[in-house]
Length: 171
Picture 1 (cartoon, rainbow, N blue to C red):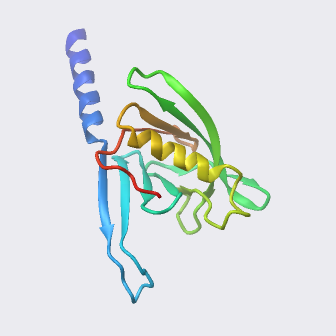
Picture 2 (picture 1 turned 90 degrees about the vertical axis):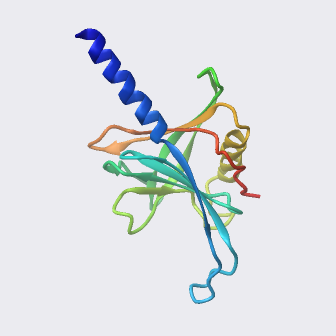
């Protein structure tokens, strides 16, 4: 009986690992919407848990919670929260870790966190460099990036982001 339970757990884990995927889309320029150039979007999705989204040409990303809302703080009149970021090698060894502040996205029903995009003077110190390091680690094709963000009345969002098959181009 115990072997059956262990086997079922292993199958469930392997199905969960296979479900984590990168989706790359191209959003074409649209004069009516004011989009002047094609923008490629990179989305790493873990079904029923969450996702991370990068946009080509931008040092920005969004975290998405598909299960519960984020547990926001309010600091200096801005709603958001600090998330923990870790870089790992292929052997699950932690290479580096840091925290960074992400803002709550208005009208997101508490399910989106995003890097601030209000210009160099108003963005958190070091944000651009941290986003660049995250993308560089994913572009190496080895190891992974792990981001942990607390959720309200739910287990924390704990994304293990595998390298993208295509180089993420944030310039």
